[in-house]
Length: 265
Image (tube, rainbow, N blue to C red; front, side):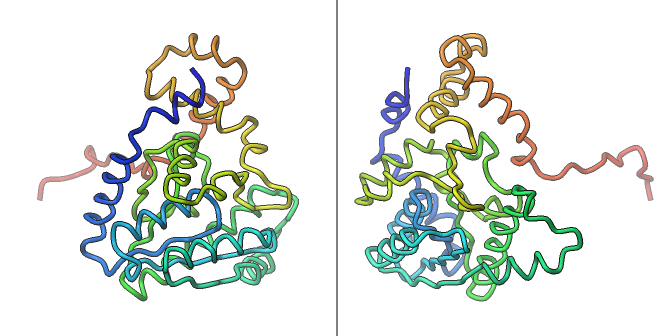
């Protein structure tokens, strides 16, 4: 079993139908959705399916570059928005993130995780500003791989109202992009762009083709851990450890049980 098994495990026409119906039903009480369009494959697929579900008039896209955003991402975001016919706003998050840094006692750019996570949290705030102003829902672009791995910023890009492609692994999102006519986007290396020379697979320690095969074996095939380890070697432990360490990101904050302290009144 390899990534091709994962790619072939989905009926893409049916998945497209299910996802667009999900978006349509969930957004029924709102004027539409707002999505952060980065020029990457996940946000491209999410935006395209939202347009298919709701129509272009009910989809607002926001491109939010930083100092780490390469020119090709901006070019691709505008190309995607143009093809889909959606309104695209551009909000540069660099001055906002820099203001945060100046205001934070003890701020250190050397702590890449803490400093880098400011960017997706700023972007989340921007998206919810437009959601509030226009009565929209924030449509996220997290995929199944990222959700299971916890590879997202808590209350950053994880702060959304719905996750329409959250049931698709990364390699499946890429295949969906090809089928939607965005093949060149599907071939781009994935990157959150939180610091210089930042790639998702570099940070994760393995390519998505292998990671997704491990996740599929664990969560869809329900293979025993020993068998997964024997088949995938060290990558299996890398994936398992990340899943366990980040499981809290998928849960609501814990609340103490006060049942013993309640009184009948």
